[in-house]
Image 1 (cartoon, rainbow, N blue to C red):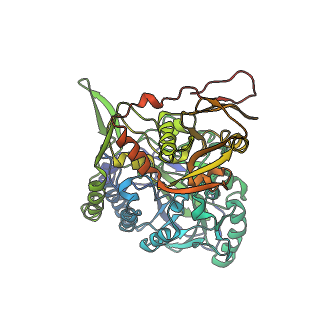
Image 2: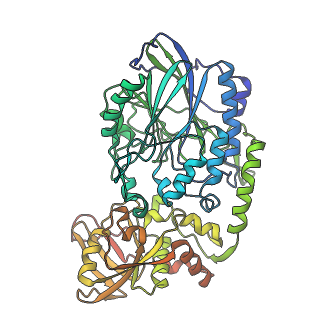
Image 3: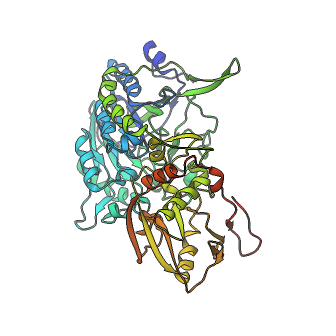
Length: 565
């Protein structure tokens, strides 16, 4: 279909993308402004995770993003229309150059890009509260979170919403954060906070906003996750559930984050368009009269929604996920090359000038070689959250050896990347373990340990709670508990005393692990322990850490074991 929105030749040249356009939708008028016609554009990103700088292929990065956003603003404002730019949260954690500087380059970059507001993500709580509040001061835009409360005072930690006036049209924008933050956040940083149910919060807050502000439209910027057809599995209910739980059309749009997927749907809106690739048309989700969008992760795309509001109707005239110098692999003359999809977006010189000192500072400290490995250590989330891997084994082993414990346990949510074969730098280590968690050493009787393993070994797959074990413990895991537990090759003695390591994050209840009483926080930081282990064992032989079916999962009962490693 041909879009009603007319693009300038310059903008089409810069974007080089396909659009999904002319999507009809109605909105219930909230005020007497329903006869006016207002055209406006919503731009959005989410799950930035420290990616202020482009990668080795020249993909994404805030400098190219600024060129893109500036060109869209110029095009839209030339027509006297309006632009708002939102983030679905999770600015923190993922890139060492950003992590070591508390995401300051990222927030400085967001200021230069002109963000209007952001949802508070669960990874905003990866650092002590003082750092989060410093980030809120750095930002020239509000952090919005309607459902995060201080347990002591009963007051919200951040503003719940903001009103934007676009050509006389009043848009209320509400921020929401996943309830799972209480479970997956570091307990030391979130135990004094309450993350209330977003649906219940909205059912109370929306009537208050209507009575006080009389908005024409109500949007939400969320960090809750988009789960197709509301199938959220072990995660807290996300955007689809919320849209379906409110009166039809009450919430006009959700700009989301957290699940880190491009929300491009098939025509039935019940499943993702698996054929979507950079530059392709994208059909956003629509549930119960609410548009739901999400722009994947890391600034790989900028989402663009062009709306017309007239006679009480909100019409989505055009929607795009615009790739920011994303590439596709091609074979030319027998060689593998990567070509940018569409036209290359040049980097903005002023943004480069702003960000380069931060990048240089980080690179200098992180590019120091610490050792070598002779194969890939697997930490990809689509693997490490489903089965035992050599990297999970290595980390658990390194931590237990550091404090002379009998064995080690590592939550897979604390393993964020793989390590490729060859030279290993400190940056590689920090990509794997960016959170700066410390290691706890616990002491239990065999009987206590059996009860603990019955819970921990049965943590759900496809979650950060799923445990990785060192190779000197073995067991068969069933839905009814564990059996045939052996430590260092010997059967578990219920009366003996055992020691083991686990991230302090889990020791104090993170990821839903049982809180440990008889334990000590060693103070050793996980990334430093992994770094030291690779240094002292370099060149490291990855085959020594390959899972050898010592942890066998049988999801049915205590019958024939099903090997999943």
